[in-house]
Length: 389
View 1: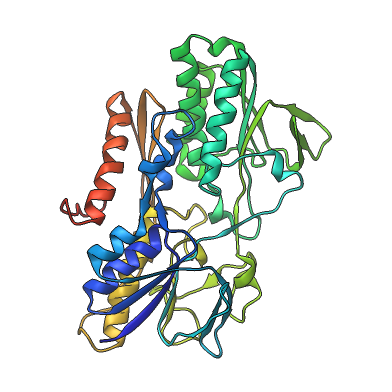
View 2 (view 1 turned 90 degrees about the vertical axis):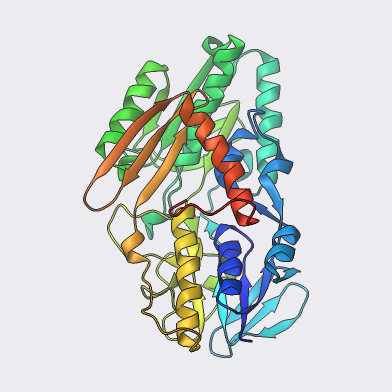
């Protein structure tokens, strides 16, 4: 049986482990966490709709179900020439066949410790809940949510979850009858955050901001964060009792320090079949990889899963386990999200030929909750996999 080592226990790594097993490989997955954190449904932890335990799914359950080996450790170094990885435990592993699915690091900002992120370390979702509960107990306050960019790789921007939590917090304050006591401001360095989703989605966001009386600070680069606010490069300041900020993705330090082929942001250069350029038998998928494609391209979970399945398929071809054509991730480049707002959602889709926005009052929120259940059940084979989901 052919062996593969998969680095990363997130959405991409888990999908790779499952599909490499389906292709007949012996799989070992190395993760620095004992659970798969399902970020798309983590937006509800800070507002009390969901719990940490329901979002953090034990990797051991998945390992038993799909019969792959799970190792909890952290990767500290990678050597492409020697085809080795070094773990925090000190162990050095030889890996002739490797899949890197370690996600991305984060852009560093001065004063970032004064912020919390819905897309950061999973524990920050609980800290956000504590902050929100304290702010509600306080009775009034100033709330600032935002996200940043990476000029070396714009595809690493992740603003959707920030908007979702922003709308959900607004909805929670409305339900409590205290929304008018809070100033809510969204900030971002780009002039039109959300523009990559298409003109219709951008118009919807603008309409919702006007309707809900949100303030905005767009087009100003962030200088640094302070305990009670955000300071911009033009010297202006946004006061805040709670600052939620999602830094753009950046290459992990251990990847930047490796000999792997990288783009300017430190993401691994691959071909359309997810093969790392110049290293036979090594693949990179999901946020760890450098995507090719149109300017509006974005790193999302559904694309990471496509890349994982394609890597498994293409590896089986390379090892002579099947005789089929290799699969490219490029044909699957699109933006797809259900932007939850607490009392509904908006379905957003964009590819090279069209951009669609479908408002889904009330039912959209429950459909996204149902997707969280479906995601876990389908990963455990308790529920049949629906193509495209």
